[in-house]
Image (tube, rainbow, N blue to C red; front, side):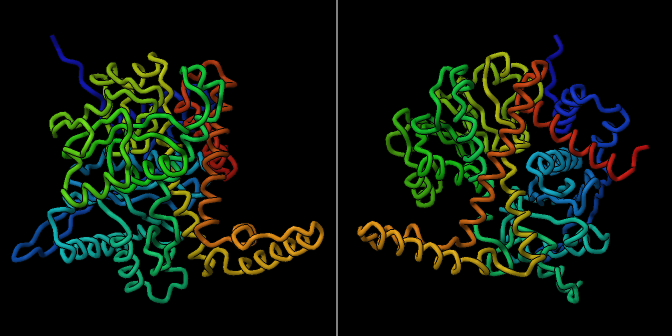
Length: 475
């Protein structure tokens, strides 16, 4: 008997695209243009590590130029390959269109295990990779704007920015060549938490629809719902913290590379993060049942209302999909569910909140950072004090009119002007709520569309096609 082969990450993305394309009524030729990656660059470059010269394999893929610059993160991982970067770049184009961010999709990858190198060695690799991008005209505020992804963060983005300035020191908008930078290096407050917070806003909005929750046997709202989170990296940890602290969700399961834990009564995520920091592992956390490294994917089978895969792609396949017990799967990672697994999950009446919408908070706030870099001014600098003074004067009028004094605490809360992070969070929340309602409307108004993912792809494909038409590329 021939065993069924699981589809690759890229093939799953193409399957999702083709499935949605059939519902758009768009000419097949235009669909093919939107689907393919416009430019795929593979590079090899030498870096001296200790007494040896290591040849590093790296990629940059620009999926679509219907809008420029292109935009997408840089991933450092031993598993990086051309197909993976192509899949991620394709998802970026779809993602940007869904949240109305005016970028084409792109992605980068460097095939290394970042945890095997010292910071100095990583800096060498990052700066050399940046130099390779500059030589090929693959980076710039109006060309292609990288950002953090798996294995990278603000530190690496600062190195990229500094390297770019070394080559292009006379470019006034140089800070816009990369996003996800530290605040001290022209970054924006709230970028580090952006993807995880966006995941929370998306889940919360989905849970607010009484009709949809009733169909799942749940009550509206996120408060009190049980949640299992796979992956405690930047995205997973921020999702869990915001969902617990602001939404009132109960974290019952957590998985990391060393294994997973479960406690039906709840796990305090802040206490768990501190425990892992002290012990190096989430295993044997007090009060929770632990499963070792070989069983770390058992989290997919935990009893919970919401499952949040926040690690890597292809985590839920046709093999483990039948055992998923969650009623909602919120894709915080890129591509955690394969196309063959999705068929099984939809048949089980599981609501899948797709990655192309749900983790778009990162690129949304990257867009805000890019705008800040181009405008050369911090958000809120011009109007914070003006708004604060106006609000304070309104409170004075209220006190005079009513004869009731406003307490210092009330005045501080009501009269304060918005800081940069307040505006960033507000813009992110508005973006995620509006985008969810848009794709849900498409899903509900078209009986032939079976999922939020298909609706999201339909929405994005139509927007990209419209751009091509308006550019006059197609007669």
